[in-house]
Image 1 (cartoon, one colour):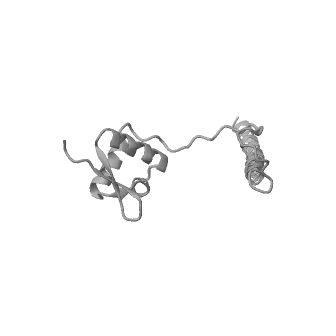
Image 2 (cartoon, one colour; image 1 turned 60 degrees about the horizontal axis):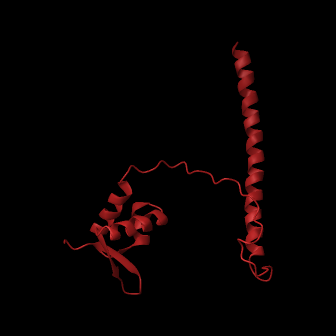
Image 3 (cartoon, one colour; image 1 turned 180 degrees about the vertical axis):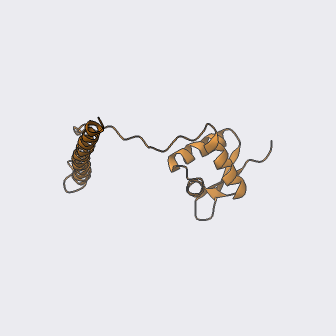
Length: 136
């Protein structure tokens, strides 16, 4: 019986190697297609039509991140802590400190400013910083 299982295991491992080789080819093709599309959108190849008007080929669905989601409110607390420790900190710095994506950081900051928890402040050099809102 163990010979049968060993044979099946070996066959499955070989098939897995074949699948991985085929998938690598797909990734290379997708990357090359993106490079060609980007080149076609730039002069001298651009036709003047907006990219959305051009018939765009179907894209493969995006792969989901294997990173687990943060618990509810964790990003909010991390942003508030970062601002509390460093008043006037920029959104990019907050993203670096907290390891939260920039998109999520900007959205969280906007919500906290809207809720009156944080205030925007102009920094030297034209950047926008964030600090805790003054108590009402």
